[in-house]
Length: 385
Ligand SMILES: [Fe+2]
Ligand SMILES: [Fe+2]
Image (cartoon, rainbow, N blue to C red; front, side):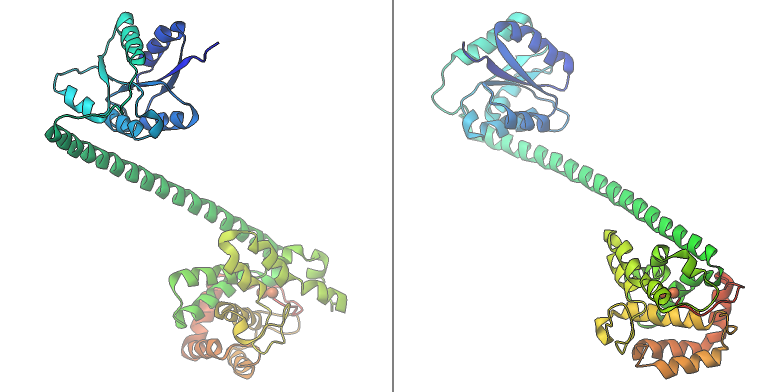
C-alpha cells in the first residue's frame, strides 16, 4: 500500500483548512495544517510534504515570504505550491510567480476546482526547480517589496520579543522582592523572639550602607551591602533556640553552637542565585581583618570590602545597644574602641571613613537610626550579634 501524499495547508481561517481536509482526505491525501508562517515552518521540520497550499495573507508573515522560504529548502524546490487568495487580481500573477508559486486558487473555491488543481499539480512531473522569473524588472520590484515586508515582520518580532522580555524581567523582579520580603519576615520573627536583638539586623544594614556610600560604592553594590547587613544573622534560625534565649553564661559547646550561625547564613542564602554576594557578606560577618575571626579565619583583602563594612556595622550596633552587663556604651567609648581595633578587627579604610562620620555627626546618626529601628529594652548577656 502506498503512503498517502501529504498536502500542507496554511491558512489562518480554520474553515478553509477544514474544507481542504474534507475535500482531499477522501481522495487519499493526508492534510497537515498550519495557521501561521511560523507554525508552517514547525510542520515542515516534522513532516515531509508533497505539496503546499498557502494563503497569501497570513497573520505573521506574507504568504509570498513563506513560499520563498519553502523553495529555498533543497527538498522542496520542485514540489507544487499553490497560492490561496480571496482578493484575486491579474497583477498578482507575476508576484506569485516570482515567489515560487506554481499557480493560484481563488477563494472561495469549489470542490472540483480544488481537486483539479491538486491532481493537476501533482501529476506534472517537474525536472527543473520551480522558481523561474522571466522578467528581471518584475523580479527586482518583487524582491524589493518582499524585503520591505520581511523587514517589517522582523521589526514586529523584535518588538514582541522586547515586550515579552520586559514582562519576564518584571516578573523576575516581583519574585525577587517576594523572596527578600520573606527573609525579612523570618528575621523580624527571630528578632521579636530574641528581644535583645530587636532591630539589630536593619540597623546593621543601615550603618553598612552609610559606610559604603562614603567608600564610593555603586547603587547596585549598596543594595547588595544593605541586604548583606540585614540578612547577616539569618543563620540564627538554625541555632538551638534554648541557647539563643539562655539568660546565663554559656558553656563552650553552647558558644560553638552559636558560632555556627555565619556559616548557616551563607548556606541558606547561597542557594538563591541573585543573593550569592549577599551570602558571602553574611558568611563573613564574624571574620576579622587580622584573620582571628570565624568561621574561616580569612584576613585582609580575602574578605570583600562590603563584608568589612558589615563586620564594623555589626560591632558598632552591638556596642551602641544594651547588654546584660552594661547599658549601651557612650559614643566616645565606642569611637575609642573602633580606633583601638582599627587594623586588627576592622579594615583600616572602612574604620577611617566611619570614624570620620562619627566625629562629624555620630550622635545624630545614632538618634536617627534608633528612632527608625528602635533598640530592645531588655538587657542581655553580650553574646555575638
Ligand atoms: Fe552574628
Ligand atoms: Fe549581628
